[in-house]
Length: 118
Image 1 (tube, rainbow, N blue to C red):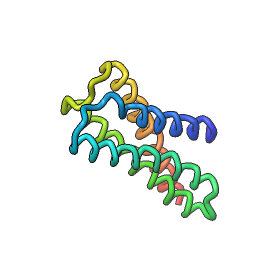
Image 2: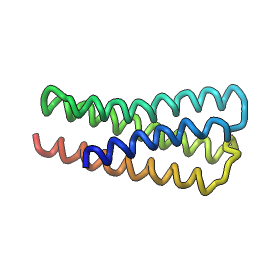
Image 3: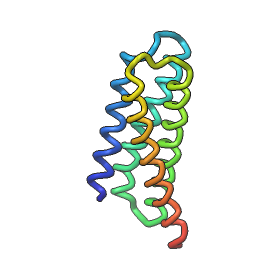
C-alpha cells in the first residue's frame, strides 16, 4: 500500500507538471501554476519523508503536511479549471481533479486514524 500511494503521489505530481503547456500564458497563470507545482510535488516528497519518520508523532505530522498540500493542490486545480485558464481537454482536467480528490480522501482518513490512535 505504501508503494502504491507513493507512486500515485509521484504520478499526480507528474501530471500536474505536464499541465503547463495547456495553460493560458500570463502572470496569474504563472502564480497559480507555481503554487500548484510546489504543493503537488511537496505532497509526494513529504510522503517519502513520512516513510522515514523518527516516531509515530513525526509520522502523523508529516502525513498532516501531505494532506495540507494535496488539499491546496485540489483547490488550485479547481481555480485553474473554472477560471478558463486551462486550454486542454476537460476530461483530462477532470481525471486529474478526481485523482487529487481521491488522494485527499485517503490522507484525510489516514490523518483521522492516526489522531484517533493516540
